[in-house]
Length: 467
Image (cartoon, rainbow, N blue to C red):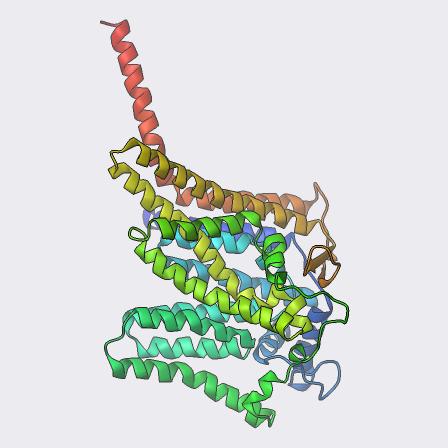
């Protein structure tokens, strides 16, 4: 029997729990996806089982990626058995872990509603749904990077050397899974600067214990195990293989990916509207202004570097593969878009204080637009997720007028009225129920004036009929 405390705890945690259960059902109805890169990384994990090193297919042919992800996968295979299905299940678990950590980060930096909306936007993003259902190391690296960031936030808030070291351990793990994890240092550094550390000794100690694990483990792997210099990480085929001759390069390839495949038009519109409110109400929205700047300062270097590598240096992988090269930016896109809800709440409260009818009308229109954009983003992502489950061939074009880009296959396409399709619909329903449960008090407050007005009219009518 559940006690009152258990019911209260379940009620408080149901929004996140509902999102996790719902997105699990949706994820299982999609994929697993496959392509040459997933087969290549699966071979590296298999190499760890066979030779103790991430060799691909033959002894000595070491994969040109950071090593840790393949050891984690090999350990998982050792427990549950070697198969691409089991490997994809592990990646999906890392995706679910990222959902939880994004909620924690959003709640810690912004507020609880923002954390919850960011979680939904991330979970339903077609970008995340694909990379959490394909055997890539990216989902592992993202989870470890986000965990590093969350612990770093706590270390800054509490001034803790121990938590700083733990954050550093997860940064080392993320970096030794995929080198792009280095970008997670940007929000950490900015948050440290905004905290204005006054104790120089404590600040220096936190930095040292944070950096020590990545320096130590990188030295052990590259210099002791491989006998290479640390700069060997730049000896990667992605940094040498050029685009095919005859391909017309365009710096818009990242925008094409975000608009058509990664986020979608409504999601981008929500981000743009969220940022535009900062310009008009910067004195009221000081906290989200600072945090949105941190998110943008993380997003832009990732995108710019991808453009430089793909077009400026004419490199094939960065140009065709924005889905993985820009992946670390996704949580920060979600946070900026989700902060729109908190901004709308602030402006709605401001409208109550205004006596000018025109101002009330303007603020009401802004709030309504913001809420509609967030709702549209969620439902558009659900529609794109549904399309993913019924499409066997994905081509992420770099420009919409060329059949050039990155290909992913879905060998397990599902049909209408199948069990998996019904479970997908159930997943959407459970996920939305979590959101509705979280906002139930706001909904009650929204309908209170309407209910009061109806009761007043009834009372007036009754008084007229019974003088």
